[in-house]
Length: 319
Image (cartoon, rainbow, N blue to C red; front, side, top):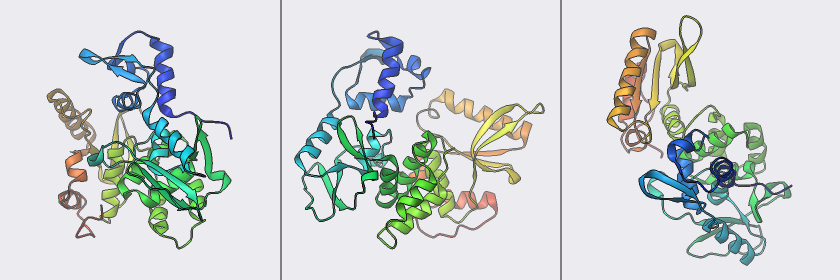
């Protein structure tokens, strides 16, 4: 299989093609589809430098994480970069939001080999078929399908679903591929949980927050909501698109992420939009934030239950 390139390099190439060595703003990057989170990923990788007043410049410093991955696979015979580290190179951050420390190196070695352990390397024994391995740059890594299957088994459920939703959205994995990979480990640890998460996979999900919110609704025993519901005007044109909801009830729940829904101006725009949806189209739309979705209480489940006239089927959170 030919080498693939991490998304950070693809995004950098887009910026280089458009701006060359010239400085640019985050707004200019957004016009190319380079979001704030992607700019932060480029900064973290060392491929981008940020100056004053939100101005950025491309940077030639090599990725520290890539250098650490190269060192690990050179030092540990048969090691293949996997799990969260492979997900990062594939464009997804599998660390829970509260754990945004430096990403450790996750790697696998074939069964029968003694894993190497250190403070910044997590090494695990596992079966590794030739079709599980590709290369990102010069580093051996698990393929998108194997990476996704391992995330579904070993990462916290909400982070696993969020990452794999986005991988499915980009077309790098499909539910069928994941089902086939998981079929290799019948009865093994966390496989049942992984299969359950595959059944919830939705490539229409547009953010981690939407995936977290959807999983909380499903885990509570409520009917699975539809994602990205179009709201049409009398001429059949799409006026709005709703994150999650139930068409028959004209009820929607949206994830208000901190990036686009926290400033007074953004909050006011959200209120106007939801009032228009209520008055013109008959939709009741509720917005929830990260604290409500990732918080420890069951207030979200109780609130959704009241709206649906259903009782949550859980009494405590599993994640």
